[in-house]
Structures are given as structure tokens and as C-alpha cells.
Image (cartoon, rainbow, N blue to C red; front, side):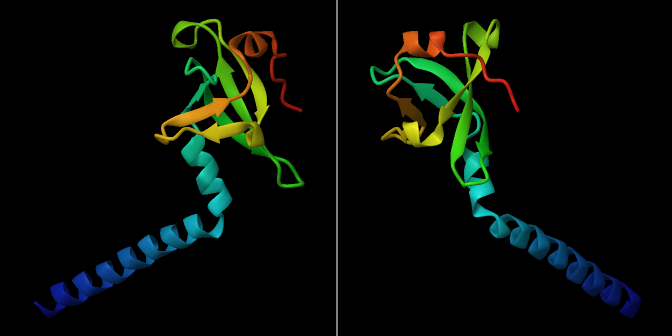
Length: 116
């Protein structure tokens, strides 16, 4: 009985330490967490047309962020990736996506993103 109690206490202590470590790791880089939350959100024109989805957020050495947005045809077939300065995206009032001042035509004509 005593061995089972000691084993239970030891297991609880080990699991609590792992959970604490995971919490600390997320808190260490809130910017990374915020970037991850934006991935997968839609990008809309000012007239409400969805033109893409945020695939990733890149952070430059100066701290500026760029959204890599997948734009294109149905279900991503024939899509391309473009870069949009994150400062040019505004969170929608309902919080389900971002609005850009770019028109659908400007997005279509934008050069394809090429990682450096």
C-alpha cells in the first residue's frame, strides 16, 4: 500500500513538472504564439471577398512581420503564395479573419512569394 502511494506521489510530481514546463515555454515567446494564432485565418478584401488564407508569419530582424498568404483557386488548386506586410492587415470586427486594402485584381497580379 505504501509503495503504491509513493509511486502515485512521484508520478504526480513528474507530470506536474512537465505541465509547468510546457506552460513556461509558451509564455517565453508571446509573439510566436500570436503568429501561430493567425495561421489559417482568412484574408478578405474591403468588400468582403475572401482572397486567401494566412499560411505563415515571418518576422524580420527589425521585428516587422510579413504574412505569407495563399491565394488562388478553389481548394488551393492552382494557388500561389504572396507576401503581405502584417501591418497592412486589419483584424475583422468578428475576429474571424483579416482585411486588406488590396483589391482582388492587385492580389492576382502580385508577384509570387519566393523565400530568401
